[in-house]
Amino acid sequence: MKKKISILALSSILIAGSALASGYRIPEQSVDSVAKAGANIASASHADASYYNPANMTWTKDAWQFEGALAYINLPSITYTDNRSPLMNGNSESEDFVIPTFFLVSPDMNSFRFGVSATLPFGLTKRWGQPFPRAASEEFSLKVYELNPTVSYQTCSMFSIAAGVRLIYSSAKATQFAQTSDGKLFTRTMDGDTTEWGYNLAASLRPMDDVNISVVYRSNVDLGLEGDVVLGTNYPSTFVMETDGGVEVPGPAVLGISVAYTFGPATVDLTWERNFWSEYETLAFEYDSPVRHPVLNAVFVPPIPKNWEDSDSYRIGLDYALNSDITLMAGFAYDETPIPEDTLNFELADSDAWLYSIGVRYRLNEELEIGMAYLYDYKESRTVVNGSPRTGINGEFTDAAAHLFSFGLRYDF
Image: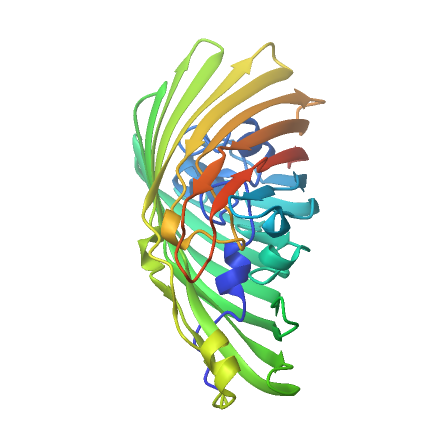
């Protein structure tokens, strides 16, 4: 099968992942971004600017700057309560993850600065064990790694531009298990990986020392995985099919506009992001070999409508220098979900989210600084009344949330 940004599960896997932003994005990659609820574009002033706003590398310290962070993410169990029968209720598994990231920025080189970041921009997993939810999402897991080299150029004392290349590697696994009341089984298991490319652009304007106005753009990357697919059923008799296959879903473009203002020891960052999820219209699996079994063909071949919508995120972050060594941080954000009610499913029971965060940085000496942060992501309850025949959902999702703890260090040399 020719490689076509397919994602053997990314349809379901990507979708099934994060509870940290709308859809399956994980915007919070550094200590500062966690502490400020993702409001870290115009105010990015350290090595993590290489990822969040490479145009700001121009204004950072004229030295080699390194930052490494380790984040722990906990996704509590989600509760589904069906309106028709308690036998259709379910609870997802609680999930725990550790995510490492690093960022590097060079000294000034004739008005050029170079940077590189290694992040995990989206993914994670979702598992359901009960019969009704399990039919849509027994297990979906995704790992997405991004390496992003960038370069900035200071055109004048007030303006800087930047661009970068995004190298993205994804690996994924999906398992679906459906069993009817009369014992009929239908299963699909997929494994795959892929490497894709994208780009990012940024510009920063500093009309005065205390004000930064920034625009950043990360391109859409059609995430895809090729790999092995196994389909199986016991109806009308036992049948197993092995083939290669794939499916295409977008890693959406994101536009961010941010303004940071410094007054005395405090800096406030106001950020608006537009997430271009409307690229995700349908989910269509492709198989190298025709699926000739009529029941498996009917269950696993027809395209699935998604019809996601573009969504907005609103973020505010605060830095406050308590003294020369200690900086306090806090943040708040509101993330809209891109998933309409008629296509909401167990792969990602997403809803609008409210994010609250705090953090602190402590400078040990001139070269070394450590920091830690905590973010709580509260997802609103979401009710679906007589959902589409494809999802079969008629009930309420509650208790969706996320806890994120981040610890990192910075070193200048």
